[in-house]
Length: 154
Image 1 (cartoon, helix red, strand yellow):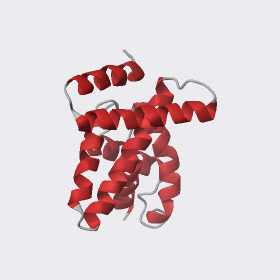
Image 2 (spheres, rainbow, N blue to C red):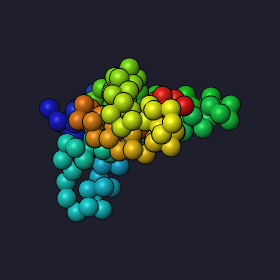
Image 3 (cartoon, one colour):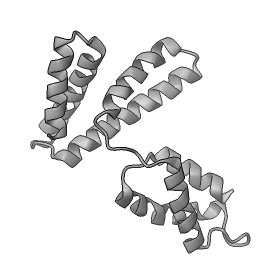
């Protein structure tokens, strides 16, 4: 079953169970998907659907961070619920350890670990080689990747 069918089936279940949070989140996802399809003039494939879900999840994560910085847990909590629903449809993200292991390899390959010529100024070269390798392994949080590389180069 594809992502679209899974969302539709879960939406029906949420409506039957009177689960308002899940129902509303799935309706928002359907609306975002339909909007992109109308704008693009064609139906989205599984990769396109996954991209929409990733974008929606990223928006929720950013909102949660901002709300928590402002001390507004009353606004962050609903976003966390929506994020949990969205993440159900996303493939498993790469773990911090997986990202770190590949990052260390790429840093060694590029020579960014050399104290004289490497360091933080080599971040662009490292990221250029690292991102395609990570993409082949699976989805990764770009913010986390950037933070790990920055920490390793410092």
